Image (cartoon, chains in turn brown, green):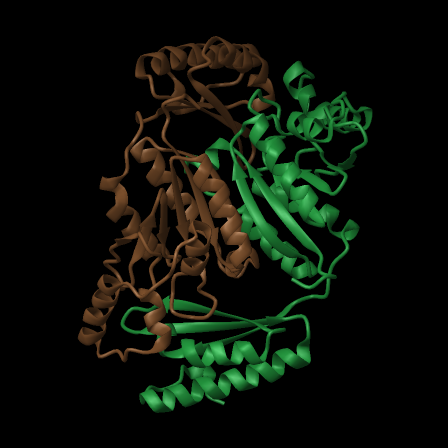
Length: 257
Length: 257
């Protein structure tokens, strides 16, 4: 990580993820969102609907990364305790926010929904926070310090990420090149390590692909410096070609130059 | 969490998850695995292929939970540094393990695969660890202390979880009951909170379902005590029925008793 890189931590909150009942998709969506903006998602944590666990995780992450994103636990039921935990983490009160209440009541008027105590929980926003608009179901998220508190329902989470995108400072966008090989990663490991040593500014990842009847490998090169990335990609392609010649294996169709 | 509960932490290791290039499925699979065994998966962390990040996370998790599972970073390439990081976290050496080498060489002999330096990286196992058999591709995982180090490729991760299952002590299996409602969770929030107060030993979760043209809610009750679970489920069903009557909304088809 370079000194000037913009980093992020993601906190996923919810018993349903940890029990396996709900399969998370917000990690992947947030990861893509960060990569597109040139923000380096550096760590993800998943914790249960437990105040102490949320407080500890959010305090650890917000001190460490440029931005923290949280997803889950901002609905109207008793197990939605994220706002309470964030207020506790920041040592601030959690009053009904007039702007949030107005947003909710406007939507409820449209839909003929009764105002009740459970629903009004969603208007409780930590003191000093600014609201994150929820275009889907009106109940807002909020930003306090560098922490962005968003919904767990994937479509709402995505809408909220879009809403905050213009407020985030992006880093240099990282570009990537993918190079396919029709040999296993064990065959590529040593020459790839030698190239990684020569290009410390180009991150080289190796990912095995278990095909139906043969092993494939995808090498992914990533760098914020496009010239260095292209130079490294050329060298890796040459190495991959030589290994295929040596092994007597044809290159994958899309890697014949 | 009760004092006698068996807990687990999961550490997912890999840049490809944090960049969004690969969508994780091991969190969901491990969560289901734990739930089936009566182990409470309490926390998940995702970190990059960075030695310090792995060491810090594994040390935090292994002190806190009964079991730690890791997935990713045990292949043959330079970016596979999990074994190195685990050895560092435990302060032990990382020699070539004769048993692991024999497993690998037996497979390589079958497949006519050359033994090389990169592939032999996969036989490096921290001192004092025991091997976890890999029925898919031979390269073993390992257990050291309460930490189980496994592969990132989902099919291999699943096979390794099956391999270690008989060695894990399960807790009381948690049972669950799902109750559907054709009203939003804001309508159910207050009466559900009152029932949660009456049944502290039955965890009640509320999950919004955004249907095509109307809002649904799923209430999920979980407990290790089947009698209390059934008692609570009866009360929740009664509450849900009353709310539907009051709102003039039909119960979902599968919730008509």
